Image 1 (spheres, rainbow, N blue to C red):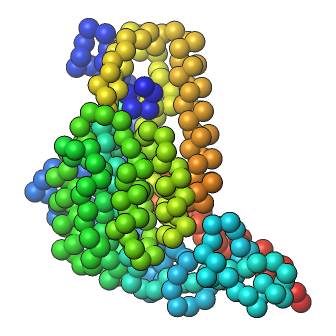
Image 2 (image 1 turned 90 degrees about the horizontal axis):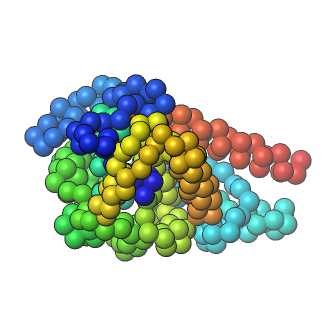
Length: 340
């Protein structure tokens, strides 16, 4: 049940564990209740957006590449790339398949695939993963809509536990407010295992034109979503936004506690004072980390990890700089292979 647990000290259901790893609580940006959307937007504009504006996207160019009108670069073909983007002249000259990359047009369609399953409501400190999901969606949607780009969403959650709520992609501040209202109005999914495959498959049917897709989830799900993620990445530029909490990877010594599966409600009474149990827990968490890294690599998607004990703006800045370095390295490698 690791990764989607809730903890209670034995005999005291209201007590909460301390901050894992000594991390300060409440340093991430938190969500707000209904009726405070404008206040949320003003706060995030002041604390986050003004730091990211111009770095994640400029007036007419975004950080994301892959489709548009202006040629940005050429790179070697990788399995899964769209064969329609192969540059046959360069391929014939270098004897190696190459594909074209384009600068994005100003108007880009972005889709947010939002996992609102039971495990998203978990947080060992003052910030839940759902708060982090809400803040990330708000920041990115605000950055995109202010330049005329369209944003839409598919929400996994609600009474049916299905990815049934779709917010069509549109532009403007009203669309942003509508998306945030639908996000807050969608409760966590009813008890049962999360099936991310349903969310990804639904996205393939609603996002018909090539888009930037943010899959915002903790990726605690029933098996089978990996293939769907790879299929989605063949047509769209996909970024996996993973929500994590430190307590999901390492249990502190809290003595006797009750662990409850946040999705199924199953409970287990364990002794966290036992060092062997904590080691097994950490080993299981590390194995899952390795499995997720392999899944993202096979699908060819970038991964942005957001922690409930870290600042959102710093995580986004680090991700943006990393992508720029990767694009610069790819361009330098291509130029080095060009014949004199």
